[in-house]
Amino acid sequence: MTQPTMTQPTDIAGRTPLVELDDVSKYYGNIRALEGVSLEVHAGEITCVLGDNGAGKSTLIKIIAGLHRHDAGTFRIEGEDTRPQSPREALDRGIATVYQDLAVVPLMPVWRNFFLGSEPRKGYGPFKRLDIDVMRRTTHAELLRMGIDLRDVDQPIGTLSGGERQCVAIARAVHFGAKVLVLDEPTAALGVKQSGMVLKYVAAARDAGLGVVLITHNPHHAYLVGNRFVLLKRGTMVGNHTREEITLDELTRQMAGGNELDDLRHELEGRGA
Amino acid sequence: MTATAPTADERLIRTSPLRRMLGRPELGSVVGALAVFLFFALVADSFVRAAGLSTVLYAASTIGIMAVPVALLMIGGEFDLSAGVMVTSSALISSMFSYQMTANVWVGVAVSLLVTLAIGFFNGFMLTRTRLPSFIITLGTFLMLTGMNLGFTKLISGTVSTKTIADMEGFASAKALFASVLTVGGVDFKVTILWWLGLVALASWILLRTRVGNWIFAVGGGKEAARAVGVPVDATKIGLYMGVSFAAWIAGQHLLFSFDAVQSGEGVGKELTYIIAAVIGGCLITGGYGSAIGSAVGALIFGMTDKGIVFAEWNPDWFKFFLGAMLLLATLLNAWVRKRAEATA
Image (tube, rainbow over all chains, first blue to last red; front, side, top):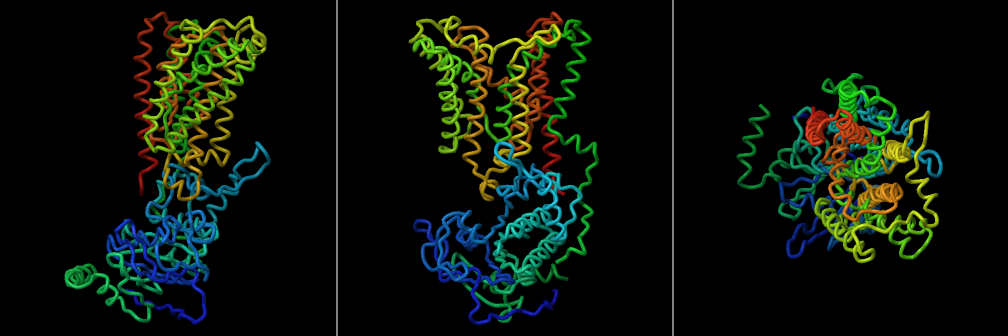
């Protein structure tokens, strides 16, 4: 395993988290989707949310993204009690969510995707039109900033690799002034190299001062970049640690839990060899 | 940041100019149009004469006026099966309203515009509210309009066609706008050709140069993605349906003012013609891809095949065969394009 070399910013008392969930619960009818989950996201930090399928990760995202309202507990954005009514409202308050499907339209060129929903325009009245020049140049520049040198911003975004598309989605969120980036399993469908690439951009976004919520079921990916780790299991929080409090082994053990542990360790060690 | 060290991704697809041209949605249709043109130019002398071309353009324009908004709608991911009979409805409304109210025909034309737009709004509204497939919604509208066209016309006029409005006030000026003939260099051109070209230009502008155009591609190519980034999906779709109804109004007024009475049973089956023109022109049937110019080329192929067969003095039955073959080829080409565009590295 790569040994983390970066210094961890400790939780300075009095610093207001960008996003804070405190004992948040969500019910769908009589189904308890989420119970008593707390997490905080600070600027320049990555908070990882770990959990197996059905652990409640998606529900958590939907609450932060403004798609669903929580039923109990408090949700604060920069210290202020809140309850976003729509994804648009969450976005306006600086929370950008990158879903697994990335919210990109495969057949559309990269630059059209980049600005979709927030297109810059020039001209007046009926001649108001897309500022295509600015759109292309900005797309190219912003992707370059994230380390992707696109030869042609006109290519359909579907022709990019999964990792690159993920990065376009992240670059888009950063460009539009997101303060908090919520990433839904960005490495789930990717190979080793592509995952590494995406994690690099996640780190780049963090270094740019954003707070990041990284949803994943891969403790190795989480531990590479994370500052805080929230573990979910069957809708409840089974752990909430800062990096200092936990090792990768412990994180993996907690995530696997009980009987599954031996099998998993065996598998992981086999892979690492 | 990593600005100084951009990662070179060796798997990034290089685009040559040829490849870029192959990516144009119109490509297949332009090649097809050239082939059809050459073919009929060889087998029928009168085809390439000015008068012959004017006839072809007229035939193409009557389809093309509707194929443009139908193509936009298809890029937006939906169908409109009511587009054909809506043209007839629009013509019937202006004709019967003017006649019954003994009003200036322009009043009827205006009322028809409002009612036709309302039908388009109804299609879009029902679609976005019920989330049913547009095939079902507009099939319903298609049947209802077909019935109403016949029913109301019989109820009001007593026959299956409307009474002539040729002697009514405003007829001449309305005819000048919707159904006049322009003589250029001794050749007669119908004014619908101008309407058609105007609509193609307008639609291309909207599609490629405006924010709404971006939204149209997005709602057709990835509705949920579009919604997630804040595109007003429902409004875009409703707008597209109203675009179809606006064009149906133009086509309907042409239908009315070319003659002076309207047959209430007309228009059934035309909706497929428009869809075929759009598909031949490179629109993906699943949405998200296509062009207005492509729909125009598709309509041109229609016009050329339709009239070319007549000029060649063949049995017009073959028209349908040609059309079917063309449609199949175009769809195969589109499927290939889509695969290429969606292939992930």
